[in-house]
Length: 120
Image (cartoon, rainbow, N blue to C red; front, side):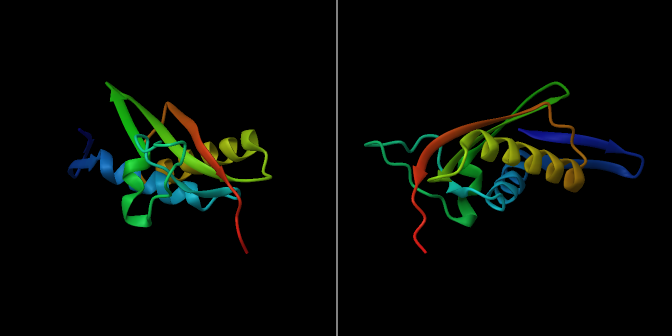
C-alpha cells in the first residue's frame, strides 16, 4: 500500500517502506535505543538487531482512510527507563515524519522486543 498526496503541482505517492525507513532511522537516533527488531523474529527469546538497510522490517505502517498508524519494534539498552525511551521515540518519529513527508500520524505504538547491555 501507499499514500497518495494530491498537490496543486501533481500527485505524490509515498510507499509504506519509505515511511518505515524514515521512522526507523529517526528511532535509532534516540537515547536508550540499541536498535530495531523484526516483529516476527522472536525465536528462543532472542531478538536480532536489524541493520540500517532492514529498518522497514521492524516498522509496520497501517492506514485506514486518512489515518496513518505506525507500530515499531525496538530493543532498548539496559538501565534506561523504558517508558521515557518509548515516549522519546514516539515524539521523534512523529516530528520527523511530519517534517519530512508532511504526514499527520494518528498513533505510534512501541513494542519493546528486548533489553540489551551495551558494551563500551
